[in-house]
Amino acid sequence: MIALAIVIVVLFYIPMFKWLSEMMVSTIELGMLLYWIVLTLLAIIIGFKILERTLKGEVG
Amino acid sequence: MKELYVAILALFFIVGSIVAWLSRRYLGRGAREFFVGGYRVGGFLSAMTYAATTYSAFMMVGLVGLTFVGGVAALGFELVYLASTVIILGSIGPKIWYEARRRGWVSPSEMISDLYGSKAIGIAVALVYLFTLVPYTAAQLKGIGEIFGSIALGYEYGILFAFTAIAFWILIAGLWSVATTDAFQGIWMLGSSIAIIIWIVSFLLPIGGIDYHTFIRSLTISSNGNLLSFTWSPQMFIGLTVPWIFFALTNPQVVQRLYIPRDERAYMRTVKYFALYGFVYTIICVLLGMLFRSYVSLNRKDMESVLLGNRDLVTPFMLTLSHPILAAIAYVGITAAAISTANSIVLTVSSSIVRDLYEKVSTNPNEKTSKAISVVAVLLLLTLASLASIMRVGYIVELSVISSAGLLPLAPITIVGIARRNTIRRKRNGFVYPLLSIVVGELILAYTVVIYGFSKALTTPLLFSLPSPIWILIGSTLATIPLLANNRAS
Image (spheres, rainbow over the protein chains, first blue to last red):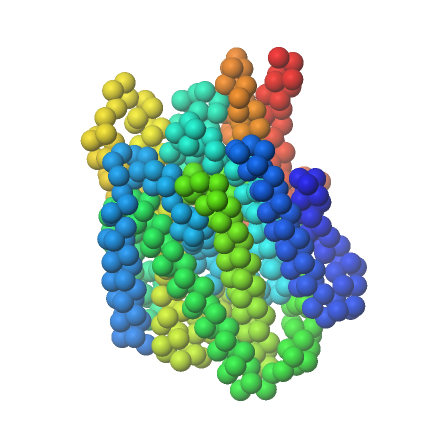
């Protein structure tokens, strides 16, 4: 789970490659905006899952 | 406008003060009650104080301006912070929460000091907080002073108002009054930003003849390039985001918020409500910047270059086009964002002074003296920040910008300390490595500032095309590796 979360954070940096950013925008005009929103929602869901597991394992 | 702002600000202050006064009934005795609410705070209140503390006036002024100039990349910058914070709050956060109540931590420097079993490291961390966060607090006060100045109320009166509100709302009931007023201010911040975006979408854009297609086209062919694509340099993106990824572990005012939820359920609610608040607030602020850029480029071409030259003027100019009541509510929202950030910083840094520079050093600390030092520390820190903003010390804003990088060396030592929390105290000379980690990180930052200056210290390539925050992180992480190696060997 933690590894997946780190991958998600790294994926935020993919648009730094100009051609990828251009490709996203040429496919969908708001592609970059949607890309980061989807990544954030995924990170939040994974964060909640990790939280549940941590609370059960560590504290509970 | 002036009268309206004063009236709404007065209403804001009166309601905030009533809220703070009512919270007194929760306050018990001792530093633990004053600084962390006796670890008895509910989920909603914890989440709102976390959100209002994190999100400063930067969101409605800085982020809107940054998006206006550089487009959607600002969204990536702000959302990578939110994503990594939720992950940290889900993984390391519960361990900090659990250990805080088990070991009785009050200040974040005390946490580091206790993890490594060294008073010296606690003092060093408290000093790092002082050097990085007093300018940051001064920058928040300066922001309020400038709002007062821009509507002819006098810059100095703005600082005086901020000093009074912050001191009053801290001293009434410590964390309890800060958390309850933060919740009130957080609701005001979010409410006013929602009101502005409704006004833009429902009134300003239709008046400017802007529909979805015009909006997309105007941003695609802007003078700064295609604002819907990535327009920043990789160094700028990395340099600004890396310190923020670790914000939840490095900034004491939010680390201390992890101590306060009363139980597991409250902690879980804190994370969930904060994630929701942060997501909505970020999207609104970025959309405001993009929508307003579209409006200005099609309807106020005369102002476009002025706003591109000074992006902090974007929000004030936007508000001059709205109804005065809405503008006044929004200005008070920005004031609230600055106050809610500054009061938490002052409370937290004061707790470090009381715990690490008095209670842990004194041979016979007593509750009465602790309380007196708490009050003096709060007033002293506020006076320092106010004096720096009144004297308009030139490097305040620059110092506040690099404060996130100044705190970055605390990330590796916090992560290693928490990961090895049960064994690290037993390491011989274990405190040397975190101290070395801090020194290495701060030296790299100081070197970058000397070479490139404050404004470019975070975003200029330092080595192998990578900006300084990456090297600060690498340098301070390397210094902690012997701790992990020693740990395995034992």
